[in-house]
Amino acid sequence: HTGLFHLRFLFYFCFFFFLPVLQSTRSTIQPNTVTMPGHPRAEAFKTEGNKYFKEGSYKAAIAKYKEATAIDPNVPAYWSNMAACYEKISDYEEMESAARSCIKADKAFVKGYFRLATALKAKNALEG
Image (cartoon, rainbow, N blue to C red; front, top):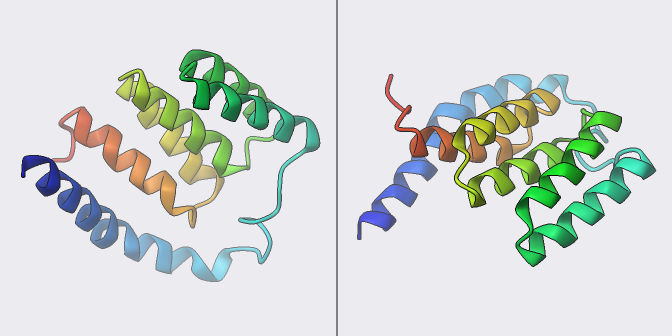
């Protein structure tokens, strides 16, 4: 039951803490920024990273997502996927950093906030 409590906490934390942020940025979002794919080379690195992730090769996946972000740092999915890899290897400092970069890339990309909350919870840094 503790796990269910934590999931509920994360949901409510993300929903109530970040909802005002999302609402305040809604008017500044360009129409196609969320769905428009990145640079073709960056997308190829993302695809390779996804393959490594599915295989459980998280460090190799991280390297590919880093290559994608080096080409196009404005695609939040690259950062979010990287954060997911860091979660798998329990590197919550790097997960937090990737999540913050994800949010910086697109303030309306909700997964970025979820990844950040997950990292902060793992670090016991959700106070205040």
